Image 1 (tube, rainbow, N blue to C red):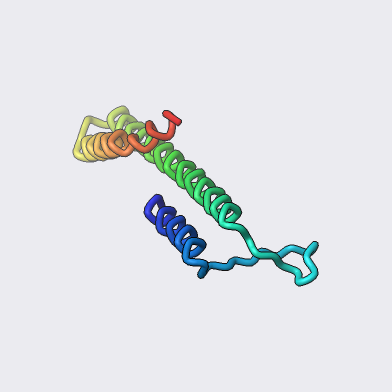
Image 2 (cartoon, rainbow, N blue to C red):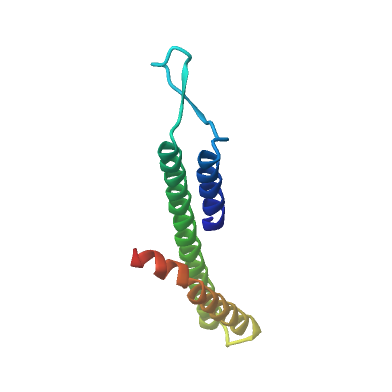
Length: 119
């Protein structure tokens, strides 16, 4: 996302420096029905779009983390229920192994979650 932001930012700035960029925005108060945006207005719109994308990405990462943690708990509950009903068997160890693997992946992927909480 940051790479795309930087490319768009550079394109806007370069376009205005070279005087090759003209962007219109619909504006009913203008006789023509639209007006030319300034460089600052375009950069502000770019910033808003970037912040919106980051916000949605953060929500996605949080949901994924919560889902993985819930899945781990589900595997643990299933494993313990199997153990409660029967002797510990391959199914029990399979569910525990899967829970451990998912828990480890969830913790490894928690880094973006921790970075977001720092903001």
